[in-house]
Each structure stands twice: as C-alpha cells, then as structure tokens.
Length: 277
Ligand code: NDP
Image (cartoon, rainbow, N blue to C red; front, side):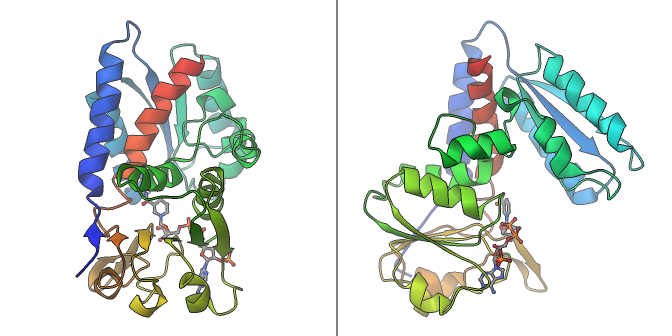
C-alpha cells in the first residue's frame, strides 16, 4: 500500500475537542434540537449518537421524539416551535421520516439560521451563490479531511461521483468554492473510469460497494470515499480500498474515514449557528 490512510476518527475527535473548547468559553451554551419521528432503528442510533456528542461538547441537547404515526401537522408544529425558541440555536430533523410525513417539506420549514444540517433550500442557495451560510455536514467533513491533510485544491482536477442534494452537489460546490476544476458524474455519465482517471481529487458518493476500482485512480490522487454499503463481507465503501490504496496518494477508509466527520461538523455548525443568532 502506498497511500496515506486518513484517520477520520482522530480528526473528528480533534474537531469535537476544538468545538468543546470554544463552547467552554461561552457564558450561554448553544442548544441543538434533534427531531426524530418514528422508530427506524438506524435513525434512532444516529440520533442517540448526535445527542450524546452534543452533550459531550458542552452544548445543550433538546430532544424531540415523535411516534411512528405522527401526522404532518404535528411535526410541523414542533419545527415551528423550535424555530421560535431563542434557546434553540440549531435544529436537526432526522431523515428519512415515516411515509405519511413529508421530510423535505419539513426541512424547508427550518429557519435558515438554525439549519445546522445545511439542507434547506435557503442554505443550498447560499452555497450555490458562494455566500456565507451553514453547509451540509458530510460534504464539509470531506473538505475538512482534505484541508487537514493539506491536499491542494486550487486549480486541481476534482471529480465527484454522485449528484445527490445531500452529498454530491454540495461537495462539488465546496470544491468549486475552493477553486478546483470540478466534474460531477452520475448514472448517465459515459466512461466513468476514464473521467475518474483525470482526478487529482476523487470523491465517491454513489452507494455502490467497491464500484471504483484501482485502475480508475490517477497515481497519487486523493480519494475520499463517502459510501456506506452493508455487504455480506461487512461495511464497504464505494471504492475498492486495497486496490485504490496501492495507487492513490491519500485515501479515506470505510469505516473510520468520512463517517465520523458528519457529527463533528454538525457540532461545529451548531456553534456557528449560535454565532449567527
Ligand atoms: P443517493 O442514492 O441519493 O445518490 C447516489 C448518486 O450516485 C446519484 O447521483 C446517482 O446518479 C449516482 N449513481 C448511482 N449509481 C451509479 C453508477 N452506477 N454510476 C455512476 N453514478 C451512479 O446517495 P447519497 O448521495 O445520499 O449517498 C451516497 C453514499 O454515501 C451512500 O452509500 C450513503 O450511505 C453514503 N452517505 C454517507 C454519509 C456519511 O458518511 N456520514 C452521509 C450520507 C451518505 P443519478 O443521480 O443519475 O441517479
């Protein structure tokens, strides 16, 4: 293996420690509200982690849990109440919601100044226009890993696999803001391996286990693997790790790469949202 393997757990712990240090200096503690609707087991675990790490960073965690059969209006009212509450600085609505609840419509209701997930249309618009705002957590986590490893972005060829609103599009816009030359690929892209081979920085956010092979990677490239795929062999990224690590200069593993960064960036966003209010 030639590539530097990024330790996302360690970097996430560092980010959380920096947030905790800043919070310790504040007279008023930032409050992060999490809204969990229903009893999807994966969502319950994510939200429990978020609540625990919020408390560990010295912030207040405001927990709203609604039943599986909660109606749209009931959840809307919770979001509106949290928007009005001056002690709540960040609001996180855990997706997906049960089928009778329109998750994206609820997300749109969140006050942009409290949008710590960075997923409201207002936050997405600010990012697209290159204006200050709260940025989505997983894409920010990718950028933070690249930054802390000193990966040059200005003028670099960056290729993003995936164009979702959650990961692909925002990560492409963050790379563009960092002055990379960005290509965004998706399911209709012709000759994906050839496009990927151009990349100095390759970000994979596709959701297909080990789709990106070693011979898709330009020697020395920085490879950021956002994918989380449960396979019979265990958790796998979108990149065939061993093959890619033999060619790349830097690579994020799965698990332990991008994954741990998401909550760390959520906490940082909460601190930033606090500053905005
Ligand atoms: P989506 O399913 O929303 O988007 C996947 C994207 O990949 C789409 O743009 C799709 O193209 C593209 N795609 C699918 N198949 C192919 C293919 N064969 N060739 C090229 N492009 C393809 O996924 P998300 O963006 O939400 O998530 C991506 C991955 O990241 C998942 O594994 C997810 O679990 C993981 N993830 C990890 C997070 C973390 O680490 N904390 C957070 C969020 C996600 P098209 O648009 O044409 O359909």
